Length: 156
Image (cartoon, rainbow, N blue to C red; front, side):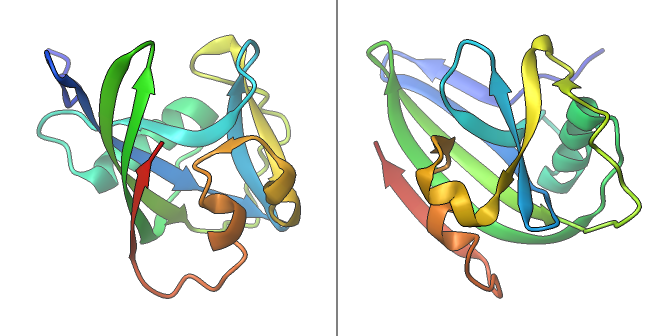
């Protein structure tokens, strides 16, 4: 039996528990993008019931890249409040920095587990300020030395 994702819906909106990967190589950040969506976003996904956030990020990164990355450290916890088509969303996401493994080559891997409609892209960390990305805080926070876990609340 497949485990259920941790998503709760009620008349007030939808709550989701997610994990996301920060994969940086040669000063570029790995992001994903749907072909009909203007925004780049992190590799990651929903945590399943009875799964730790660490287990979830390793599984999600493997599903989307085909590579088993290891965790370096937890960097950010974001509480994000936003609307989609008039519905309120409350999302909690754990952002993990994945270990830089110099022998990993993702240049051959263009598409994620979502098929050819979703593709992987390397974005220069220095040019993130000009990019249309989620989460927005990556535009400044990834330029800094990440030495502790930071809690971020975003009301969009």
